[in-house]
Image 1: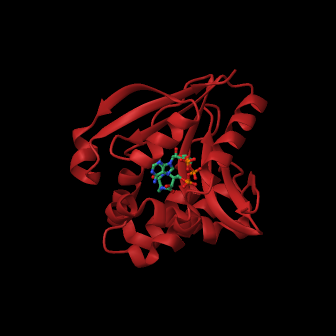
Image 2 (image 1 turned 45 degrees about the vertical axis):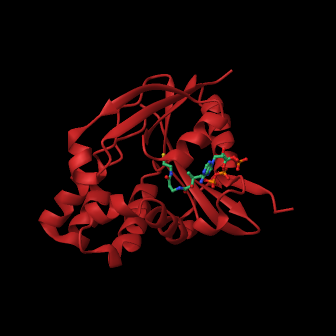
Image 3 (image 1 turned 90 degrees about the vertical axis):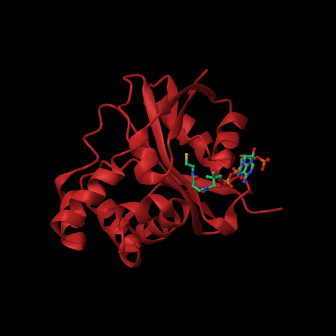
Length: 204
Ligand SMILES: CC(C)(COP(=O)(O)OP(=O)(O)OC[C@H]1O[C@@H](n2cnc3c(N)ncnc32)[C@H](O)[C@@H]1OP(=O)(O)O)[C@@H](O)C(=O)NCCC(=O)NCCS
């Protein structure tokens, strides 16, 4: 039997591993955002997360198994400060130059959606390839439900690319329902992902 999974808020020591998991999980998005600079992707992400963490607004969680971080997810509330903080933006400019930084900001914000007053927005759900299909994402999303209740919220919401079958199955298996499909020519053109399914789980 595999070791139990523990989910907890991320700390600065986790950020390198978290960045590698995010790059692996969302390779094509970062490839589009950091065009030609994928060698720096994990470092840039770690630095931007660190900048956010300094402002205590990251909402970043990790899943740990046998003492190793194997998964991550982010939770956001409407009342949280804007994610694109100046310190994080500055990192993008330092790493990619002015135009590269602006471009990355634009690409990384393409999928972002506003958060409802009673909702928690779930994003960046990713599990290390070698640890997939062992219940890690399920454990993280169960933890997200606990956090949402603690925050006094009523539902978890997220947007998933319509073509991401594993993720859609994951959310459906946890009781999320598919609310609507949003079509975007912009993300189709830039990310080759043109349909986004809004999913919601109302907490009991
Ligand atoms: C989607 C992802 C987070 C799932 O993580 P995971 O830890 O492997 O998921 P779990 O083991 O908790 O799976 C729970 C359930 O989800 C569904 N599921 C997960 N991966 C699946 C796959 N590859 N194919 C079909 N169903 C899948 C199954 O119903 C599974 O239950 P089961 O194993 O008992 O059949 C992981 O594949 C990943 O990191 N993908 C890349 C990043 C990404 O696309 N994130 C989602 C963005 S919205």
